[in-house]
Amino acid sequence: MKKAIALLILAMSSVSWAGTTPSQSDEAFCADRANPEFIKSLFDSSSNLISFRNRGGLANGGVCWWHSRFQRSAAYLTIFKPAENKPSEKEAQKIIDKIRAGKEIVVIPGYRNFAEFTNDYQPMIQLELEKWQKADGIAKFNWVMGLKGTNEVSAEKMKEQMDELYNYVEKENNIAYQKLQIKGVTAHAWLVVRMKKVENGYDLQVLDSNFPNSTSIYNYREGMTSMNHWSYGKFTPYLERKNELEFVKLGVLKLCNPAEYEIMKKKLTPQNQEQNQY
Image (cartoon, rainbow, N blue to C red; front, side):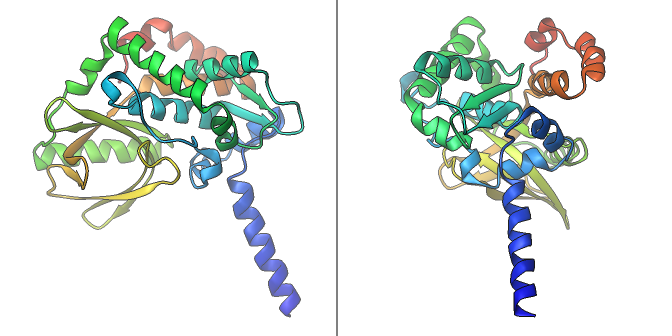
């Protein structure tokens, strides 16, 4: 009896462990993503997350927007092949570039998971995030997107935004990118991994690039006009980069469902990506 219980516990722990193991072949990649919970489960283990926190950037104000986007792209698009040789510095840069672009499957040889890879290439990734920030902020004026809302809204508007977020995260099964409008001109960002509907509101499971090694739980209850953090103060989250995620998911379809890929490719164009960031 004791042996049977021990085997049962071992089996249960193995299932849990497998749920957070990243894909290690093309076949596993597609099979994993056929499970709607798989990508979300990656965020439950620090081994699948960027190993370093948000820092640096213009005026040393951080690169949180790009840190979060890089993390989301990697969760959807990477395959790890630990038995192969590690990439050269030039090959690693190509991997980083592909993750940033978010348009195709990215194979990472020589590593078991994303934390290991980002730990070894932290300086190169940080530099790329800062280059991305400058490209968006100077060439595309995307820094203005952080100024589009206020840090407090009406209770009705807040509920409307949270209901929309719930549909996007849970019913449509997406990892949501949100801008957090803080008082003044400051805007942060996080990823919403899961949401749980509770009485009079929702519990949000989020990944914040200032605390990149694990997710946190935030509570929204009807009647609130903002959310609050001990460091950020009052803020309102705004759902953005929905169209960007559609291009990331298109990369998955190209490998796993070519027929659907051809259909969706016609609906998404580079112009759409630039003009419809939300």
